[in-house]
Amino acid sequence: MKKWKQIYEWSEKVKMYLDEDYFTSSVDEEHPIVRRVSKRLFDPKYLQTKGKEQGRFDAESAFRKLRRRNQRQIIKRVGGVAAIFALIVGLVVMYKGELSQEKNSYELVEKITPTLQPGTNKAILKLADGRKLVLDDTLRVKLETKEGVVEIDSRGVVYGMRTDSLKMEKVPAYHVMSVPRGGEFHLTLADGTLVWLNSETELRFPVHFAGKERKVYLKGEAYFDVAKDFVHPFVVSTSMGDIKVLGTAFNVSVYNKKSIVATLEEGSICYLKNSQDKVLIKPGEQLICEAGDNLPIVRKVNTRLYTAWKDNLFCFEEQCLDEIMDILARWYDFQVKFETEELKKLELSGTLDKYSDIQPLLRLFELGTDVKFEVQDKVIYVRKVK
Image 1 (cartoon, helix red, strand yellow):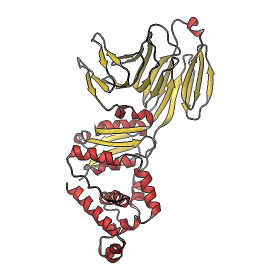
Image 2 (cartoon, one colour; image 1 turned 90 degrees about the vertical axis):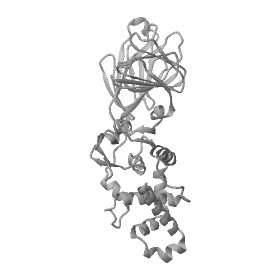
Image 3 (cartoon, helix red, strand yellow; image 1 turned 45 degrees about the vertical axis):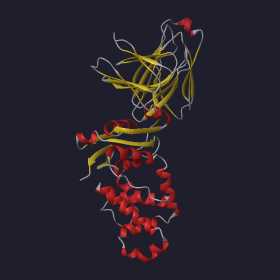
Image 4 (cartoon, helix red, strand yellow; image 1 turned 120 degrees about the vertical axis):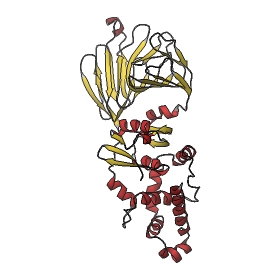
């Protein structure tokens, strides 16, 4: 509470200085940091830069979540865009008290905290005949196989199946696509099903579908927009059970053998595991099953929070910090170390463009908590502010 009051007092002082008469008459009597921040706010280029930076995420929405969860008095709405920027710059100066030299505080933060690069479109495709392809945004290739044509371009990977290939093989050949840490990729299966593969994900899929089911094997996380075929159900097989659908859009996350999370946007899906009864899931619902549980949990959720990654966004709403950092670490390819176990359980909210700098989101998280993020090479240390 004390910190928020201090932040508010600083912002109020800066706002008063935005009045030209007051600024010219009294600025010399005030604190030099406040005076310097006020002067920067009269620079159009500085304001434009800060505007672009803050426009990458919905800070106002995140503030509301932090206020409700942490039961703190978040800063009252300050009139004018300039006062909002003053608050942000003032906060950075507070956290970096020793950096009160005549330099831009934002520039100093950039020098001290190295930029972690976001991921890119990349994957490794192992064809059924043993050939391996390293995929990225620049690769443009059209491959002939005995089953059909594989096209790789900016859309991802698209399969064109030869009609006579069904007669050639009763047992379909399988390809494997692996997406490394710091990568993602898009795939169109032979039946027209669209698949988005997240970081650290592997998908084993047939060149063409044969038999009563259209079955693929997943490790990691993927979003499926399944082509409708009421005669041949689509099955996503994982180490934690199977997801069976006819034609729908859903997200499946199974990064380890201990849990599976399935989130449904459209249509309907059912969960099958061993001899247990199937569990039906409706749009807007999420299924969670942990290893050792007799029955999975089904709950209503904001599906956007679990599917926005395919649209190049990270959306967090009152989510535990250790879960947030796991998601960010896979994409920005870093390790995270918490000073205490208590810090892992903090619940935070925020939105970030996946292809932007991670620093604005980390600074946003610092606003409503006593947490400090320190970046050293490829490691982020999460510490409690002393």
